[in-house]
Length: 184
Image 1 (cartoon, rainbow, N blue to C red):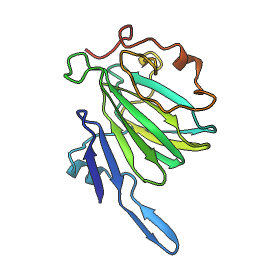
Image 2: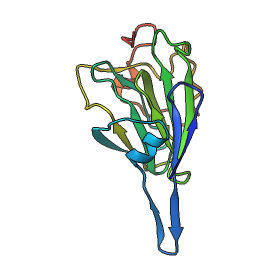
Image 3: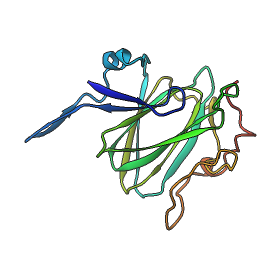
């Protein structure tokens, strides 16, 4: 059993698997292809990724891959919490340049589905946050792209941290949306 909620941008959804708890702990099917297909989500995931961010304020993104290696992502947190962001980068979309955010956490036991055609990023809200996400295409260094997380043309409302964000050089130097190679 799984609860699926549309977040307001085409294809971006919050997914909350059922968790069965008793005196021993809990059990949950965190991914069930049949249950998701019954909810209208029929994707084939080919790779799982796992990241650990040791500090609060680690910002990863905004990342995406171009076709034919474009990736849909199913993101969950197994320890800690993140603010997850999806930005529509499909030029012909009525919601082009719009973004949505969702707090995803181990405590809430929720997930976010980010479809192809969206840039994706997140910032850790707690120390020692672990994120696991499934993708529909393998990593392709030649098709890997990014957009600057703080592009004023997008205007994402990120939380603030006393020491600012912890960023990779790649994310710090990413182009703005207007300069980025994006989906036609």
